Length: 111
Image (cartoon, rainbow, N blue to C red; front, top):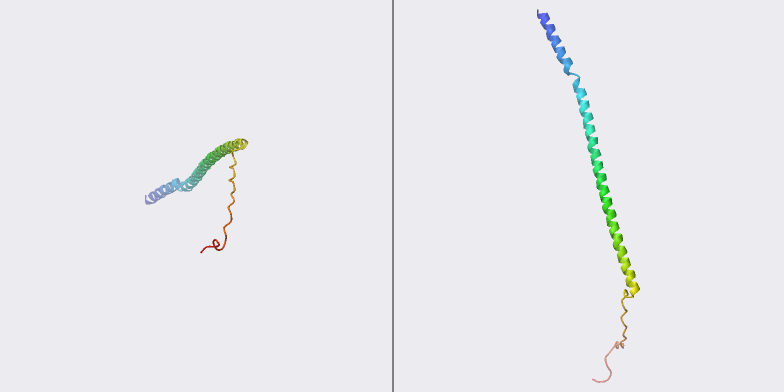
C-alpha cells in the first residue's frame, strides 16, 4: 500500500510540474514583444508630433516672410513716389564764411 501511495504522489508531482513549467519563457517573450511594439508606437507618435510642429513652424515662417515682403514693397513704393515729387532729399544748408581770427596776440595799438 505504501508503494502505491508513493507512486500516486510521484505521479501527482509530475503532473503539477508538467502543467506550469514551460509557460514562463513564452510569457516573458510575449511581454518583451509587447513592450517593443509599445515603444515603436510611442516613437511613431512622437515623430508625427514633431513633423506637425515643424510644419506649423514652417507655415508661420513663410507667413512672416510674406508680410515682410509686402511691407518692403509698400516702403519701396512710398520711396519711389517721394522721389518723383522731389521731396525726399533734404536741402543743403547754405555755407557762410566768417573772417579768420588771428592766431596770436590780440589787437594792435592801445595799451
